[in-house]
Length: 316
Image 1: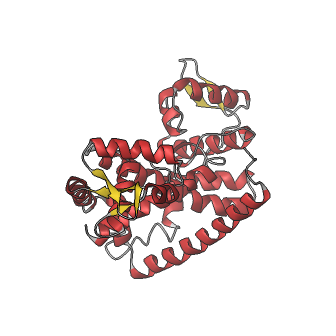
Image 2: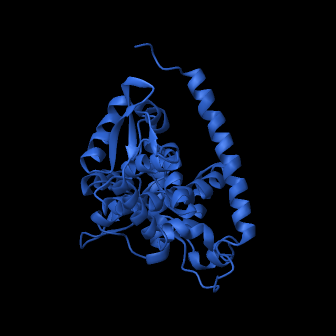
């Protein structure tokens, strides 16, 4: 496996250690944002979710000058069904943001904020007009720029600055996760299965590890690890072998078929923009991103540590 391949599948473990679940980043900011740039609302976040979805809709309208159908709104707001979108539409109608036209189409209401053409905003955004050494200078309008203008009217400026970054990270993380899920499915696997195979590969020859080590690596219960191991063993990608130091113990070992599957997945990644986008950055952009993400990870890790100490798990 190449360095690029090892980077790609090791990187997804940062996005979703539990294997196939939403990235921790999405869990953290999904409370705030909606639509193509959001997660679903959670308890106690209804008002904030409504405002974020309103901003997403107004940003969409700024680009397309149309209100999507109920199915289109469900996609825009990342809802699983039209009925979920319908409930939010009812709230927006009550707030005067939307209304039903005479031909039973949704239209902007009196409280709908008609945003300026985002093309002008895009031309003023240095991070969109500096896309690396191969940039041709032509860019499509970015609805997020219009959404930022909407947020700025109702949100604290500090939050707007935070949202402008975390929203892009969320969209990027979701796109990368979607690609990796589709890629893994080619081998009949989940992205979590691939993470387990990659973990075995990266420990080095003979590519074996104790199940308890996998438990800590994936932050999963031993039962959860066992189910995944059973599935991969049935596919012939791993096998259980005796532990020479413990007659009662077993190791999980990567098979030749498992290595071959990883090799095929890496071949797909070599042509995937979802994986290769960092190579399109200039040296300056790349270094700035690494430094910024390192700072962000440190801040979030410290906050997570404080949360665990302040709210310890209950005794079972």
